[in-house]
Length: 264
Image (cartoon, rainbow, N blue to C red; front, side, top):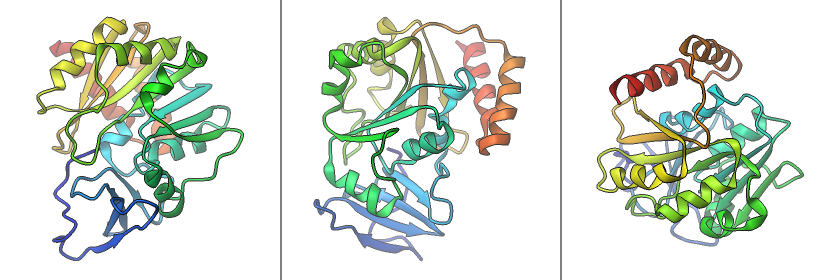
């Protein structure tokens, strides 16, 4: 979820559409070739450029992929909170050896992603499940099975993550492999920002935060089950490879991580 001044009823020059996909509260807007997902409010829950449906459009969603700097070949990637399926589609396309799982509580969001946001159908590598994220991470079958966990759990009113307890983040960590990582979308100016960081710390060896370069309020946290050895010249080399292979602005991630470490 990202806050953006894109109102359902007052966007100059935009096309507005209500997606009647099993739930009337799932809506979309279109502006300058980009389709945005809403849950019946002005808050943007995801986006897709119509001419490039597999490209990650929003900066904060791109930053959710910064784990690529540390893990080039994950075997299992899981997304909690489907949004417009940008992360799941990107991982499905760029990591053909990985299984990609997405967990979404609202069936209307899943339907909208299939019908309006080019989400492929389930197959042997891609599985989208209609279920509660807390039930998923608390399932013993998932213990130690996930390499990458991406968490973006907001309701329609964007009142902070809907799951943010110590117990939830511990369950997330328990699902990860020993060298697994979690990325989480937070609001830097939200009252529960510090609470989320505090609740992650007991479960993870180390945390780093990456703020938006475009003035958005989102802050992406990367949490390491086991602290990596960080050599910035190596990370910059990996960032160049990521940029060449995917067009993602990975060098800015390395700069952001370096800034965080120097200021912390």
